[in-house]
Amino acid sequence: MENFFNGKISKKDLESFEMIGDGKDGEIYKVAEDKVVKYFFKEETHQRELEAMKIGQNSAIMPRLYEFGDNYIVMEFVQGISLARHMKRHGHIDEEMTRKILFVLEEFKRIGFTRWDTEVRHMLMDENGEFKVIDHKRAFTSDSPVPTKLLKGMKKFGLTGDFLEHVKNLNPELHDAWKNHK
Image (cartoon, rainbow, N blue to C red; front, side, top):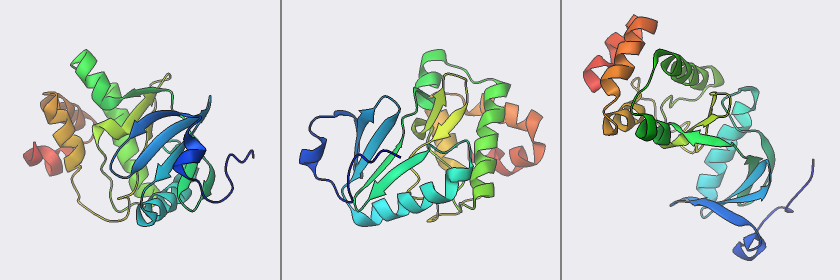
């Protein structure tokens, strides 16, 4: 495994790379065609995300973990589009996509995450239409039985009803548990 960094990085170490994302927890830089580094502002956030990434490496929904240090994680670059952007562009969600979203939620449970919810902007669809999920810092800090963040994101695009109708066809029990959380 190629090492990009040795244990700890600074903002100066990242100057030569393209920043492709940023948020309140850190910044993402593309360091190779197929790899990104997530630089964290806080050690606690880094530790929580790293723990989730390590545990999830046996799942297809998790980006591959390549390297990590005190304040960074080098992981797979997911070439694709977020579920949020897909819904905004296309204005619909079909049953097959719903099936794949339900698979992601089931994988969260199988992996052992207590939070089996995610935001639509954190679900990235690759060129094969398969999802990978990023940003797992809360994987073990909440345990709602309803994917409220996911449903809230779908509501923003007016697609909660369509999604829940597909869930009803695919898994009536889940539908019954979720239907009042539109």
